[in-house]
Image (tube, rainbow, N blue to C red; front, side, top):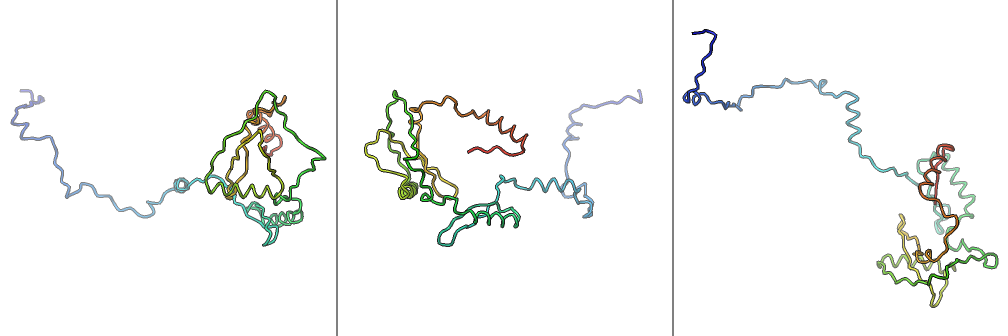
Length: 226
């Protein structure tokens, strides 16, 4: 018999007596971690900084503003300025605004407009476009009260006039403001369709983007549109 040869017995009795599934003793763990010092648990400075940065919640940029009253307690004339300004700059700005407080329009009464004997503007309309009377749009009760207050202000300032049986009727489009007030707009889409188009229309948005990029790169100032 070759001493280097190995004999494997594949008898069923041998396999049954030697199961291949190992048995675990959970009462006696086979590994115990060594106690570490507190110095070993400290994270590196760069890793700690990155983890701290991940915990920060990124909020949209919103400049904090401060409301300044240029009038009195009875007649308020409030403006908003940046709260991050230096105290010296802020005081000079408030002093400048108070010096020229009379040039601002604080109400509709401060905007009387021009006399019609001096200038009068009329909208040109195409003859082939018939007048359009839009159907009345219903609004919520709370929004209707704000619209009524705004219309009353314009009526008191002689901005509005009553007309009977007008050929053109357009609905009011209220736009809520951040301060809770309402901006009065009018749906003039039908009137715009009846107006002749300008020979030189306003530039497209892609042209405005090019102008903004060129102006910012040359002058270092942002391009602002209204």
